[in-house]
Length: 287
Figure: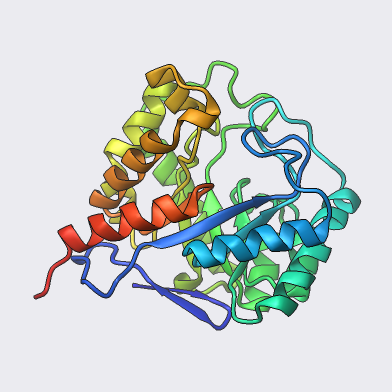
């Protein structure tokens, strides 16, 4: 299947076998926030953020995902104005420096998404599953690609005893329902990718189950994005601090790749690129 994002296209295997030329899509994380769980406050100013994005592209990122609001567990929201102040100058400068680079805006707000798309983004990565009522219409109007993610509640409360009767079935049902809302608004199916939301209102066992059964999501007809990078479930499982979670992140991503995931949102681009490319070669079919 093809994931169409503006003028950019990414080939994702979905139900069919991965072919050697079908590389996993690596989405490099660029947080321009003071409080993100892994790298908050690391970048000072738009130009430093652009320099970091250029390094991610050199390391093999296919997409740069720029976020101006932390959605870590317990995080408070920020105003539209502040989110725009943090993200738009970075998008504009990165677009000028690398006109060919696909840029994603990580936002829950349609107003932020609109300005980001005007500034040069081509993808909206929405952790809130398009629940801003203006978001589906905006996506249809602009032809942007989108990622629909599942989150239980809000960042401030999502980790307070999350419960599901069937974590995979309930999350898949939610994602398919939100994809239908998007298509009913005029968004083409090939513009949509889905993300079960690792760490967003899930226990350790929920997160492990979502990766173990990633094939259920991959067979839905939409490209599957996995965002496991440095997440707290790895720390819970293995007793590791944030800066010790690289190898476990790579293992989680490869496990998801083996089960049909296509897009991987990561902090450590160079390592992810090598691990995913090698795994993809080993499982690809020449038929």
